[in-house]
Amino acid sequence: MNELNSFQLATRLGELLLTLGAKVATAESCTGGGIAHAITEVPGSSQWFDYGFVTYSNQAKHELLGVDESLLSQYGAVSERVVRAMVKGAMAKASAQFAVAVSGIAGPGGGSAAKPVGTVWLAWGHPEGVLAERHQFAGDRHAVREQAVNVALKRLVELGERYCIKTQ
Image 1 (cartoon, rainbow, N blue to C red):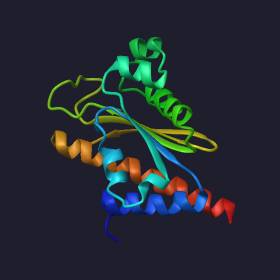
Image 2: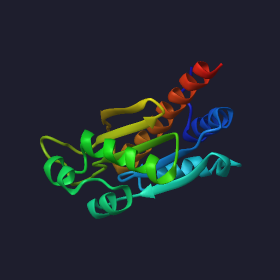
Image 3: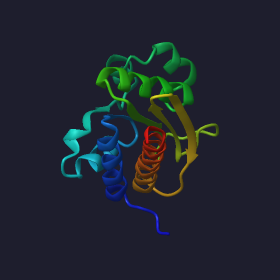
């Protein structure tokens, strides 16, 4: 089976969220609003999407999402602890049942031995908690960002499908 593109994933996400009567929020750094863009390409997405936070700087992560400055200084923006805090902040600010947060190094510069270019942390908030994953994407800046958007949406769809099964 072919991989679904971001529009197809966002369309499916919307169907699931409508069935659940739920909302989704986004908290984005390296994708710069790409996930929210994919979601709002879907006609009628205002029924299940209210908030998209683009928090590119540490200051924005702190001020808009409530990420503790000590987490940012101790672990860096591209870390599991920070994306977990970002997703929790997005869910709380948006009163959303589902959310995704992403922070990474899209390149071409900014990488290190510990966090090379293509390193992306994502976290998904759902009614039972938070799931986080580290990915190492290949390619140029555009490719890294596109892969991050698709992974973000794919996992949201998987979570939505899981909750639709639970509520049947």
